[in-house]
Length: 177
Image (cartoon, rainbow, N blue to C red):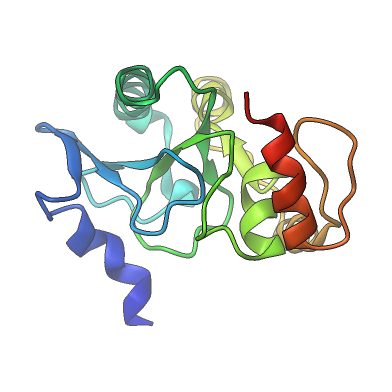
């Protein structure tokens, strides 16, 4: 599917770029799932998190560091999550830098929600730790990923269990400070 390669064009678009250096580029997510949502991508062609080895550690540490810097600079004091989807839909390794308000018209489905709030979302710290200790990222199985994406909705800040996405989004507004 051609759309799975959309990041390759997006990362080269200067209108989307927040940061650009020899190793990485940080872009605005074209379909943000929160008020602030950036993607950190390497220029090096690494297809996905499954392709990482210990040799990528310096790059992954830089991606993490720069992502956190951008969150501090552009985040307006918000809290953020930094990480990767276990089974990304888009080609090219990319780390999400996403504010935990999840306030966005682009956040429409249970799959969207669960891709950031379950074990499907792999924190950057875990990726780095795995690469340091075992030389690869220990990922959930495909069946576990599927279960994570289908799990019932649950608020990520309290124990509320909404029946649907509109109820969840209405509830999330209560957590905005």
